[in-house]
Amino acid sequence: MQKVSYVLNGKLLLVEIADNFLRRLCGLMMHNPLPAGRALLIEPCNSIHMCFMRFAIDAVYIDREYRILKVTRNLQPWLGLSFCRGAWGVLELTAGEAARYGVVPGMQLQYTQKRS
Image (cartoon, rainbow, N blue to C red; front, side):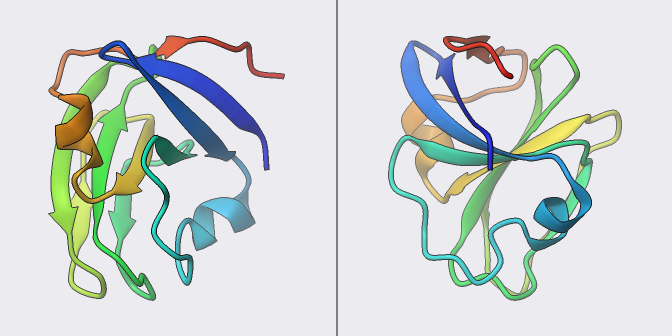
């Protein structure tokens, strides 16, 4: 899986990219919680479910320019659903990470490393 570094609100974020059908389908299902400073970017994607998840997440929806459109905090395993009209992708972070990064709509992810 491709890994990329971004800066969000002045803090480094290491992101794995889920950009094919199987990776998007599986997402973080059956995974352990991500460590602080790590995220999964599902692209393209504008909705997620929490079936087969083992931990709560924060979902950060972005447009094609990596501008944050919506933040859904603390989606619970097996119970959560989330959707964002107009989103191109969604960052999945362990619950609480969006607050730690101070994420709000309108912010933008900045590349620190070019994608291949």
